Image (cartoon, rainbow, N blue to C red; front, side, top):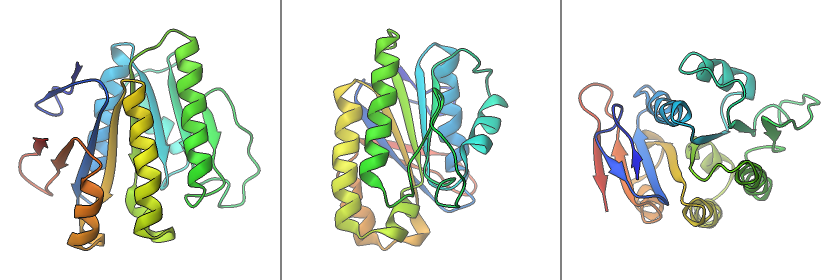
Length: 199
């Protein structure tokens, strides 16, 4: 089981994918990072797929939560190359050309999962921030298909997936379509208690 305490009052089975919904200022990203960092402290692998911030910033934020030197912490950065930077993949950071490059994002995730597996790490926490960026660049059908494969990949390796979406940026129908892919919904209000509903 993946224990999500103290940040979320729940334990979930391996292979669970959760959708975190809330406004841009609700702190969804922070919450997801906290849950990943908690796992890093316990020896779980952590992979952050970022469509908003560059890898350097993500790793700085992560370092503030838990020291990760020598630990299986990795970032799939979908931002830096799109901004025109000439960067190369490393053991810790792999770059997709842009948030539109969903095939590339999936491949980079698989490469990290494979590398972690080779190191004997069989528990991995993966976060994607944010699905809203993907939906800005691609239609709902394309994002749905990508997520179907992506969540399936996390399920197949008994991982934990956390996906954040800006609930105020999409219509109810789009949100409901995407929600079908997830095992639970975490509602993050601007103020008040986080609510988790598992299928």
